[in-house]
Length: 249
Ligand SMILES: Nc1ncnc2c1ncn2[C@@H]1O[C@H](COP(=O)(O)OP(=O)(O)OP(=O)(O)O)[C@@H](O)[C@H]1O
Ligand SMILES: [Mg+2]
Image (cartoon, rainbow, N blue to C red; front, side, top):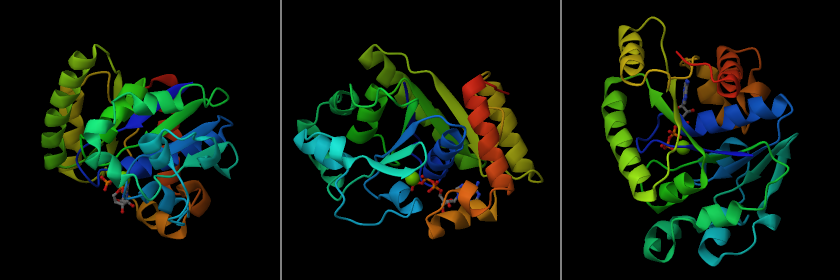
């Protein structure tokens, strides 16, 4: 079982969109996948049409070390979800009381039948993200195709490296280019800069900017349910294969 943390401290780069649609692409290919919504904003759960604020999620497991078993929702074939829960925001405030291996301990021994767990992280580098990185074997870093995203990435890789050395743990990472626009020179420039700085780390399929990807969350649907023949569905299907076969640029 692989645990993948979807991280980037920059907001709006496509973390949640990628976690959601990658997970569903894998589930549709018969892999067993669990999504964990580790963002107190609860966007991932909302994208799947789960809005009930009373549903317990990863919050109680992190704060009170309660068992996760009853908080695992079966939401689609082969796809499970653990919501953020209403109290996840309190974890950031209780940072001193939450050790960085709390999530790792919560997940250990729980998901033996799953192929992978995908953790959607908040746009920060606080205790939640640190917990995600301690638990994960791999990080997936979505990078939007604009200049500031590239700028933020060097900062992110810096904190990532510091983190690796303080934990004495190597975390292999993949970068996924999101919000790509074929006809925009800036998109092409960002992609070639990334290729230059992170050779062998950029997954082969850029996720194109598409209206259907922006619309699908408001219907509580993944792109495969909302518009299965759209470019967004094609891109995420292809990205899932990139991840499975380690296809890079
Ligand atoms: N390829 C795309 N084409 C069009 N819209 C997109 C695409 N990817 C993401 N979006 C939209 O951009 C917005 C931000 O995406 P998303 O929520 O996935 O980013 P995020 O990194 O998870 O943000 P946050 O840091 O706030 O959690 C959303 O409204 C989403 O629907
Ligand atoms: Mg998000």
